[in-house]
Image (cartoon, rainbow, N blue to C red; front, side, top):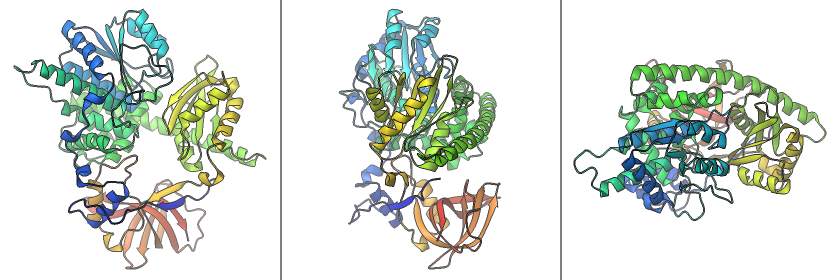
Length: 575
């Protein structure tokens, strides 16, 4: 249903920069990721960007100092994804560590209230009589919500990282590296990173005031496991500053210093904290937390992260694990239904839209984001999946994009060309959300496809696999896999190494009903290597396929106490 991805090798500058005494493979990998000095591989906290250049942060600190001095009631308003959950947990713990005693939180239920600081959430918040509301990972587009809070006599401090619209909310303070006029060098900071920086600034000011002269200064580094988790889960670019935050958080988890909730979630996913890598946070911990926000209420996930008792944390993690299994079942059903819709479109005279919109009355509102992501990966085109949103006649869409299309800008363009078509929207370059009346769906789908066609050509829809080229055959060994595993943190924009090459197929079989287990032989040294391609079927391969081209990662396979090299196949095709 989609073209074969095109393998494109990363450009490696020549001559290679001097990055110190590194393995030759690592030298090449880092150079291809635009690392030019050895200093960019130093991940000490002293190398973090200073907080002072964040616009509005001094005003934010002044609000928090007043709240601390007067012991005001503070209410954190979070978001229902992992970035929002970690931001909420971090804000609560840090504020309490820094002397604010009356701190609570509320997370909008996505099915009842939707996203952000809405007037309805302000009404719920006002029942707790807060003096100050702090938004985390949301708020930059909450104009009406902030107005409602102001009318109720509640100050609002917005901490967010999403792109700002033309008009900013009338909040008492806004800290967002992506607001107009902000000079903070890293625009990739996630929501949990923004609130962490606000807490750093508050602690620094309290230090200057001599508050810690007679007491131990709170160690905010203890919160870096939360920062790492939220950063990885939100798939923000891994610039140098974010790599520092993630590396430090991973180091704490590996050292056994993670909070009980994260430890319990890793246990539920059968991951060893001592050998944790960033992808474990993304593929093991994040989905279990996200399941709470998708199917139930993210308060369950936040309580897991806030828990200080290992037994309680384990119980909450097990509940999240069960929710995640339920989410997978729902997703599987929705994906089958979506592919049936796609097949019907392909049989139509007009064929598959370039900008694809899908809607089903029975789809689950909390799972459409995952569905859009899966379809985007399979069909390699921007996808928006819609579901009913309550009984108000509206549908909610979750959008995922591909290289070459800024999805929020595309929605902005559609809204400008067709006033009234979209009720509201927001998001990033690669992901966005929107709402619109159900009877607008067909018109919106057509307008969205037309807008996408202004930016993408047919050749853009094949997809690109960006690889690090071939791996020397003498590097096909366990030691190289260990080296690459520990060399991160790898993440968005600083991707885990992916190699490509040709192999002889010695043996193949389907395991677990949908995974392809292979034994491959290298073509020069005839070295045998095990490989696995997850969610891959070989039904379309000729029975006598002898040679394949593959894009793969090196991994360490652990089985019954034995460790061996294994290739994780990301793309494979017969030659």
